[in-house]
Image (cartoon, rainbow, N blue to C red):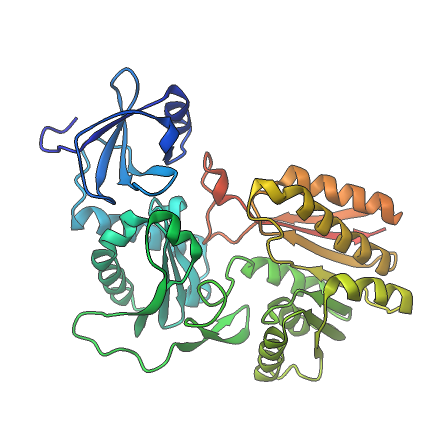
Length: 409
């Protein structure tokens, strides 16, 4: 241990030690055997094994079941501005390496634990950063981090006119943090006039409202999956279910689809999808419909519609282990109906964005749906979230998106 450091010591169970050694950054309250020393909520603590060996340093969260979130496994690290600047640079350099330059216009810059910034999400939407802070440790240091991140991006030629805090998430309450949203004041700069910006993803233009849009404003994790859909869409009649802002529908239309029907239960989502279609000159190809997909699919089957490509991108049907069984029933229903509606030779894109609906459960559900629908699936691709949402092995929570492309044969 570095003699210059003096943090409280939390001794943890062998189970916690094993998880940390496998790469997981969380220590739960029930895994702490003893604690020596005091610090403020959100302060730094050292995590120690039962035999006294150093395991890592992290943020203390007195109000959460996740009592410590590790940020380092190096006993010599000093958590000064240089440390955090280095970590920000590593995160940005990673995106620059794994993504095409054009894709950096809108991308996730910080993905929480996968970038060793526990509880911090930063999405870049052209000239705005949308930030969500879900841990008390990140809350304590965000006034140091965000100006440094803006400086880093600007020094690399990126135009950033503002940073918006989307801290209106219920998860903050588990950390003892209040909910709220608003502009983060950049030193010496005026508050931006508008929270709306335009992004271009896969050649499709969207208006993004970082103040009122879903989560941080727009779902970036399906970027390359949308591109995969576009490659299959040429000449096809497409049904895009749970369209939200129309992103899959617009990619299909831009890919040359004969016609696209975009469906969402939300009237406001349908209006956004319709506006995005018009913005891209695709109103003649894309129809936007407000309907409940669970009611719509069986009705379309009864009426005998001729869709030959169906996209299922539902919201997370489960956000806890307790509701997984009901969620899998919902996934099976929509997939079964889509398989029944598609002709032989038709195409299906289907996904789940809940890490509680594991890949094993999702595949078993698809096999059951295909069996009940009396069809066979020919797999084209199995995909995951885009690479700006990296999956950190040993941290299962970072592996959440399952995306499959099939042909019905």
